[in-house]
Image 1: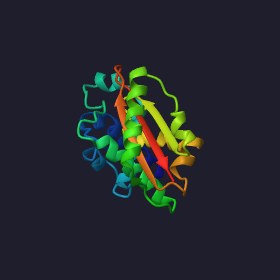
Image 2 (image 1 turned 180 degrees about the vertical axis):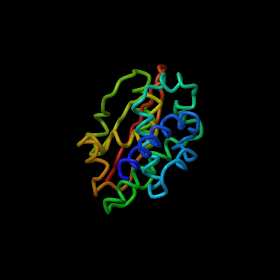
Image 3 (image 1 turned 90 degrees about the vertical axis):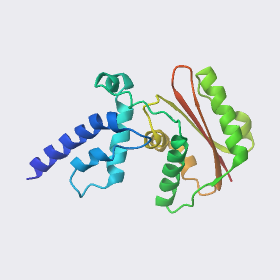
Image 4 (image 1 turned 60 degrees about the vertical axis):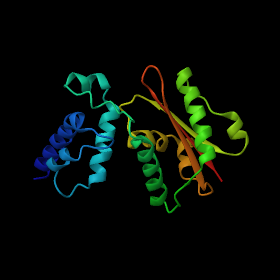
Length: 190
């Protein structure tokens, strides 16, 4: 019985990965979740889809007939998705959400634009010298909100910023390099 369930779950997860290539739209593949047993929560499905998206190069997804695998932030969905992931992560650890900070948004956007133009990643030392925190990530555009935040969660220093109980507000900038890489800068303030 358990082996049979495990086989069905594995097959369903593979279906999600391939099906999500054609069903992408700023998040997970909700239609493909119907193939999973009802006891698996949607957020688990969404996270698995995001991890599959990040693990498989966009060229592979294109080879199976989908250009929808490449994440395009045409509606601002990437920003909102990242904020939602960070807020959820903080709340799950008993912390408050971060208030929007327009000044940090502007500074983060300027820095993200700079990094994308140079196709390089390095910290804004002037920001850090003023006592702010900063997380930066660069990834292929196949990495959506869950994937991008997971990269920070899995990095001890970046994770420390995400769960610092002293931070009260944050700003974000998102830019794309000429080669199609997404650069996300997330600044934190006490």
